[in-house]
Structures are given as structure tokens and as C-alpha cells.
Image: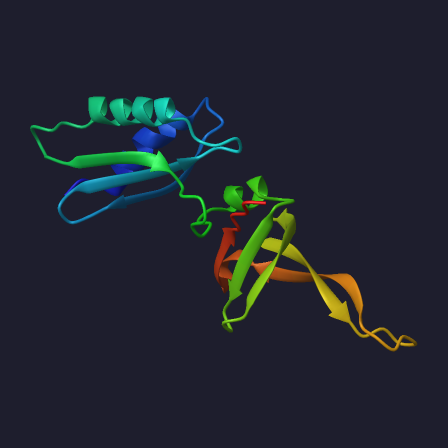
Length: 155
């Protein structure tokens, strides 16, 4: 089986002088390698092909046969790395917390492992008969939510 650390080292080497970042590497028992990269402005197919060629040039198919797939982190898929949170500040996201509660709102900020989502909610205000629509901030830890993902909108 191909060593994941070897593939990661190759991918990191290719990414070194680029604005892309690594999202995930998966290697199945039958040596299917899946590499996901991302970029703040999206991923170009030409760059995926270039990374694929780079990895293939450095792995020996005669020593170990493998299948290689290089692509972008899917739109609407859960975030896997902190840089994806940073790239989506100001955009609408959906968070499923560990209690099973879903929250949709604007990703307001990211600081290390923490992030804040702002949600417009009706809030009871003292002195008012009816609830008032206000932005309420919810703070989360990245490793303590089931998922966070970008909300696709066709507006």
C-alpha cells in the first residue's frame, strides 16, 4: 500500500509556492489515491492536472500500481481544514453542532480553532410587545461540531 505521508510530502512540495492549500488525502486499501485541494478563488482544472502529473512523476507505478484522482474540495461539502473557514468569511454557512441543532447564518469570524456565525433571529426585547429581528452571534469550536459547510444559493 502506498504511504500517505509520501503522497502528502509530494503534494506539499507542489503547493509550496502556490496559493492553493491541501484539504485532504485519502488512500484506499486498493491504492486509489484521492487528493483534494482548494483555493480562495476556486480551483482550476489545469492546476489539478499539473499536480496529478507531478505526483505521478514521483511515484513508481512499476513498484506499486495505483489510481490517482486530484480535484477540488466539493462545493457544499463539509469543511475539513481551517483555511476553508477563513475563505468563507462573510458567506452563508450551515453548522450542525454536536447536539444535532442546525444553524444557518453568515460566517462572521475565524480565530484559530474558533469561529462565529451570525444569525438573524426574532428576539424578545424588554419594553416591546413583539419580538424584534436582531443578529445573534453563535460561537463554535471547529473540532466540536459535526460539520460546517457553505450554503449554495441560486439567488
